[in-house]
Amino acid sequence: MNTPCISDGADEQSQSKAWQNITLFLASTAAVCSYVTTPPPSLVDEVGKGVLPSVYEEFPNPMIACENFIRECVDLLVSGSLHVRETVKEALGTELPGSLTRIMISQMTK
Image 1 (cartoon, rainbow, N blue to C red):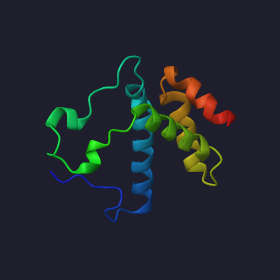
Image 2: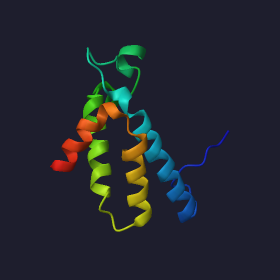
Image 3: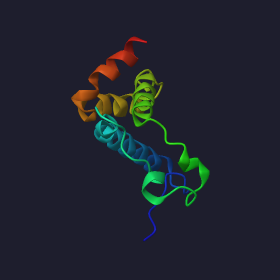
């Protein structure tokens, strides 16, 4: 099965819809990056060191990635594109889990 990618020559409208769906999906699942105890095992922990390219051996903190995503969404709230602003507003307002509201407000005040 060949799934279309955003950059596979699709027209602007379908690229925009794909970006919107990905943004809403990421916002709705962002809570998986939030954990109270130890971080979840990395991919290298699961498959073994040396099996995958070295880029996978550097396991970033998922919470930092989540904070970066929320910061970029907050930055897009003042985009010149109405579509982008509305998509991000929907992502942050209805899709982002309540447990991440503190991060969102922190990013808004910076």
